[in-house]
Length: 374
Length: 61
Image (cartoon, rainbow over the protein chains, first blue to last red):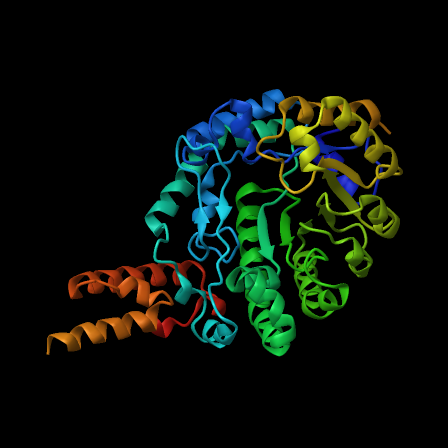
């Protein structure tokens, strides 16, 4: 069975031949190639080499790898990673550190009206990268990654995210800073709702248009749209606040992705366990939930296991600082409990940590082979 | 009046960009004109790629 067929079966809650394993190799590819992340981040050819090396080192993975080339940060897209709108410190060549967002308060609570009146173009940062730089990086990425794309195709790997849609609250939190965002729930709830309403339809359309373009280019019959959310989790707000300020927009985004014939990959950073019950309202066997290590995945299995596929959530600290035996034991438990009856993809939480030990990632893949056969 | 043109350029910048104070501080009129031109080009290009309401109005291009 091809890896992508295996993953698709999991999403449909059908039992595949084995539990798929999906280390999300992005920045970590630099570690595999043993070069500073800044080198890979700024050099598409080197990033492509890092991906190809990662495919060699991590044979048995079921999803394709990213590689750590930084072009996504240069995209003028309404996304939290865009340096056009948000203040990022990105690694330079030779620097061995991950990208970090400097979370300023960009707008005050009184400036929501300005945002809605002027739009995001009004908030282009003075140090924005420029269109030439972005297009240049996009072209380089497309050319350099061709061998890595070919390798993924030959291996029949599943593509985790071909497009993305942010939840409105995540973009708002970035514009307001965490303190401003949290106090707005109390100080100006109506305005917060108004901005979410203003954002959501276009965020959906942008994500769907990108997905349509990717679908046309790839000819893939399973197009994934990542719906990324963090700041509406229980790590920041209560389920009651979630119900009012995030859930309606989640429903709209996921509903639109499914209606368009795409597969929502619901990427949940932070602790969403108190919100898991809400997701039963979505159509069964249509979504993949990739959950962070702050979640109790065992609770998720009880709440949503008969409804939708789960992916995760080997903790980042374990992969970076643990021993292969500890990783093996953790993965064994996940496979036995969460993988029971199908509907599970063994993976790291969020993205694979840049400094994950190679032997630990291998231990995760081996655990899938040792314990995951149905 | 030499100050009038600068004031107009700063006002134009304020209409175009949230960071107008930072962008205009200590800049000559020539530099301000260049920044405004570049900003307008960037905005027009972005709007042509992402023609969505949340990006902003076309009347400002």
